[in-house]
View 1 (cartoon, helix red, strand yellow):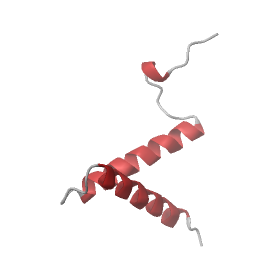
View 2 (cartoon, rainbow, N blue to C red; view 1 turned 90 degrees about the vertical axis):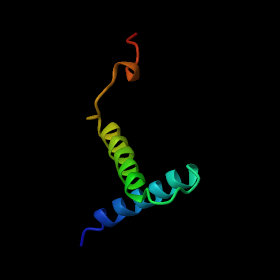
View 3 (cartoon, rainbow, N blue to C red; view 1 turned 45 degrees about the vertical axis):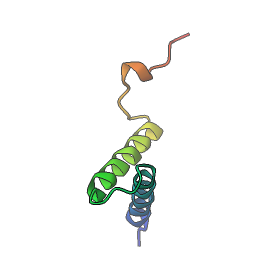
View 4 (cartoon, rainbow, N blue to C red; view 1 turned 60 degrees about the horizontal axis):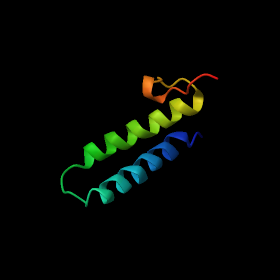
Length: 63
């Protein structure tokens, strides 16, 4: 059995909770925090795999 989806859901849940806490625990925005957490984690995964989009301000100058 593959536990990867469970681990990813847990990462998103924890990240969403942290974001919610930082914003002062506003009521009724759970989906927005879930979506933002998911977006952040997906971006981190793309960066790790080297397939992330590189914005001009993220590029390192060449030597």
